[in-house]
Image 1: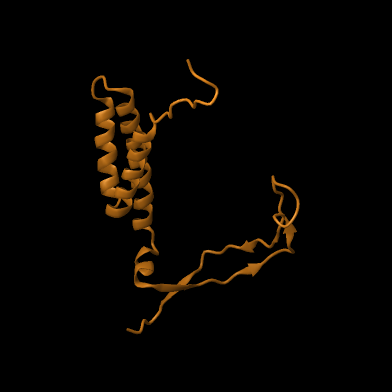
Image 2: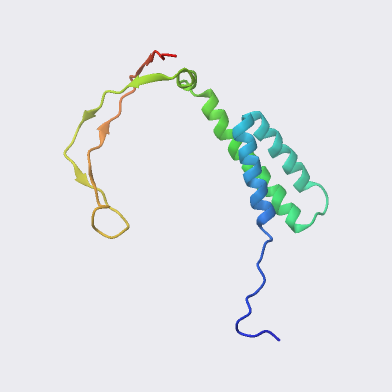
Amino acid sequence: MRTTTEHPPVDLRLVPAAAAAWAVMLLGLGLGPVAGGLVACGAAALACRGRRAPVLLAAAGTAAAAGIVIAAHTFLVVAHPLHEQALRGAAATLRVVLRDDPRTLRTTGQPGPAAARVVAPEIGTSWSTRSRSRST
């Protein structure tokens, strides 16, 4: 019989799924979008293959979803037009034009310092980069 001071056992059923998701994210960040896509395909094939234990199914499904997400995000980073300039350490010059007076933003929290006043800048499409010279 259980006394009132005993705690129920710890439920660790989702730990393998969380570990699989973290492992796939780190692998995709380290090796790029192709690795993330391959892991997603492999995990999806493992999840769809026959009857498996629920823990393995959860881990494979989570790994597949994480692989799709990391592959998409790392592909967008690699394909971005400023990716090469960022790797070279280029600087960007921004020209900001204020269009309006500051206004209070609505917040879901309590009133106070979090209710900040901001000015929305006009966002244009022109930008330029210049390389910074690095001294060694």
